[in-house]
Image 1 (tube, rainbow, N blue to C red):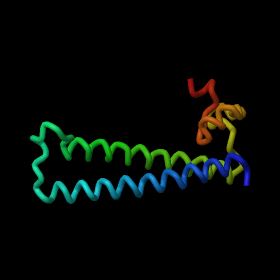
Image 2: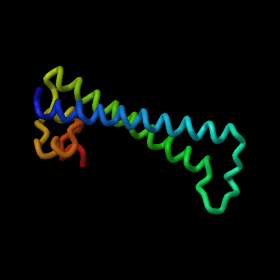
Image 3: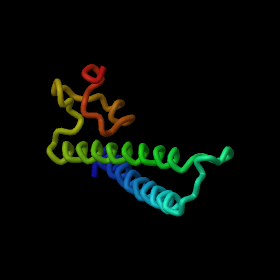
Length: 110
């Protein structure tokens, strides 16, 4: 297994764990909301709706990241990993180390 494949699989595993944790937290909030807990008027707390919105945004972000990671793994399997999808030039290794799911080289990403 290449270094980048290992890094991508590690990130995917982390993203899947994070997704499960966020799902659980959102489920807990749903139970609070169903209990008619009127925290919308609690001056000391964060409203359930605000927390739900924050968690839903994080969940969407982590799912998008999973899609990017899976696409990078598919490029790796096809032998196209590390090649810019726009100009077909190699993507700098330093860029891939920072953003292993990058599909564009620095020039095309700018």
